[in-house]
Length: 60
Ligand SMILES: N[C@@H](CCC(=O)N[C@@H](CS)C(=O)NCC(=O)O)C(=O)O
Image (cartoon, rainbow, N blue to C red; front, side, top):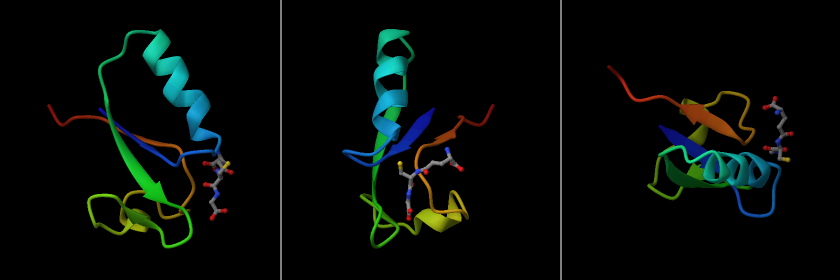
């Protein structure tokens, strides 16, 4: 599972809750201004609203 998050935004609450719950996940940082992920992709391809947080579940 991936949590798309931006430091200092409301996605921090989800990040903390998921850590406390012991959930295994990767964090992908999003630049809210440019809507780019730290991996270089367009965040609006993940969440068309451009808001954080977003969760993406692993394919099965
Ligand atoms: N949870 C709501 C709102 C989340 C939200 O407001 N996120 C803010 C950060 S606290 C955001 O991503 N803002 C980006 C922007 O305004 O461009 C949603 O996803 O629709």
